[in-house]
Length: 122
Length: 145
Image 1 (cartoon, chains in turn green, orange):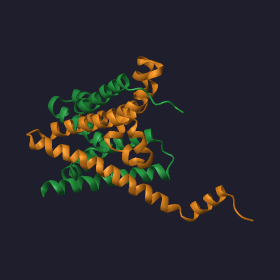
Image 2 (image 1 turned 90 degrees about the vertical axis):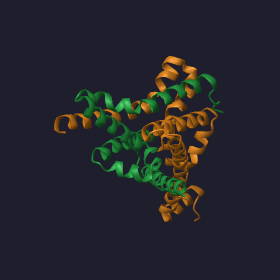
Image 3 (image 1 turned 135 degrees about the vertical axis):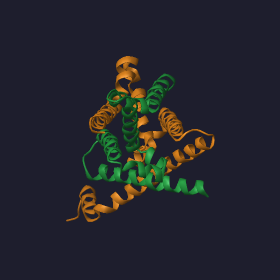
Image 4 (image 1 turned 30 degrees about the horizontal axis):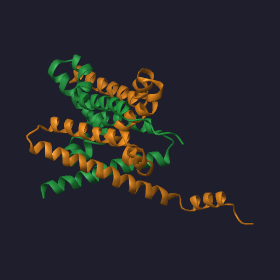
């Protein structure tokens, strides 16, 4: 039961993040790249203001899987690293916290490029 | 005089400007919701195996990125994305797709300036501005915290 509730919350909040993104796509001329950048920076900002952690506590992956969650990861990484080693942490924290995701995306991108061939444009 | 099909389309779009948006929003909501639910399933599983919240989250991201990369390689992700719009763009799988898709597409331009460079045409700005924002936040904490 507890699992079902957490799945439902993730579905609801994650879906809402995407519905908002759809409004941005349909109602503004923002390109996908700009929307992704906007989501990440918004995540850092909301996290810095202390507004994003409660959402993560509530919705779990519903808040961490959308790209705002990537921004949240960068911000909490910076926060933790600054607490541990001072000013230098501002430079190391963000990418340290997000290293797994970024490295995985690079690695899998390379593997896919090695193993697959692009579709013919016909 | 009767309107041409194009004119008719324009007229009907003007008459019902909201309905297409609502439909797109619903699809984005459902598809994005499903992706996050898969993520939550993975996260709950990892935590039941004893991983911390941080590590469980990292494994979950890697898993979703792997799925997205595989589906991109099989040409499935872009087909879903055509209909799902923000539903496949906003989750971390969309970020992964934005790296893997150009990496594959520009393979014919070589592995350095094709795969290596084009992989970052969208991910680069995302990582740059995300990191820059986190540095600003970190500096504010270091100075005032």
